[in-house]
Length: 270
Image (cartoon, rainbow, N blue to C red; front, side, top):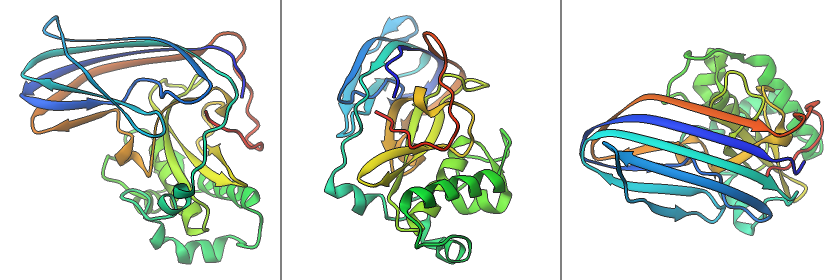
């Protein structure tokens, strides 16, 4: 993993229509070896909003706020350097990330993997075959899927966006007895720029990042949040009231040359 500095900039324009509790995951995860210079500002009708920060064991940060109604403006910027460290692996990981989940229902993929993949292959080779399979079966089509679509829906539709690619990859890997999870990331080089989602697989005792969309180099990704699937990593989560996301903007860049990813190597995401 290169130590080049990544620059992140995010803006959200939200109409809070009725009183609500809003949770937001846009801040860069605090993980071992990362150096982070950041600023987060949130205002409601021009007045600062009090934020409660919740940090999960993998460093993801939820910012929770209690809101009445009005115009919510969010501004986040960060300069990020990574020191090349790998995400720690715990004994709990294998148990959690082999289970079926809301969007990656791996228990429905056993027949498919039995006919498509040679289970005797090493995990690293199987993972590369899964990425190739997903890339060949799907077309990247914005707007073709919605927030309710799962891995099965994506396979049947034959199209989706990054979270759909990640969910299908994760479901197949779990069905092959390879623990897998989803990481929400910032992705320098992504076009059009947006929040991005990739899969991670536990291979030879390390978490490695897989991206069947092949839309951005994995070496430059910046972790936001990690979970079983997109239900755990949404950038906005609204409880009890009503909001309207009017617009948002994201910019993620690398100082210097953007990495070149041939898609073949094993890449680790801090």
